[in-house]
View 1: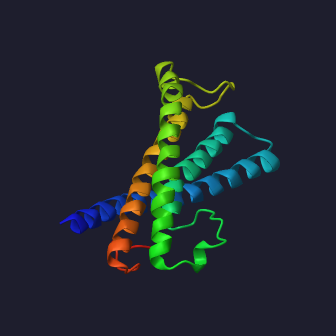
View 2 (view 1 turned 135 degrees about the vertical axis):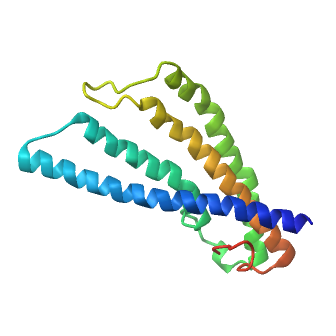
View 3 (view 1 turned 180 degrees about the vertical axis):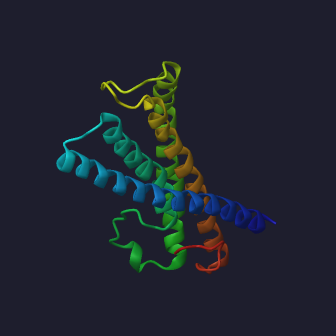
Length: 180
């Protein structure tokens, strides 16, 4: 029963993260095309708009803040891999569980707690760009900090659950579509 619940939890979180990651991939393309348009307009036609330039920063924030959970799911984060790659699957699972519980989750929770008032203040005043002609959505951009903490926490929970199953079952590839 417990392993079935863990598998369902992992599957649900992984699906959410996968869909988010695919959306982020399209935002990356939009950001590149927008950057290209800004360069062509500025240097080819001597035109430029602050809002257009700021929107690239918004896309950039979305790609990195919302893409962090997808990167964790794909095991794409930087890892100091001095001993880890030589460990057995069960030893790797123990390291991942320890890292998730004692490092990743506390950092995500801290980010959320520390940023909450900052983001809510921005929403309360409906913060806008300080630049003339800038975007009036600074409060939405700042909300990405909270979304980073939430999505990374969710994926961290999925990774912890996946590694708990690895300890119990030992088959690294059959657990809820695991990447590792």
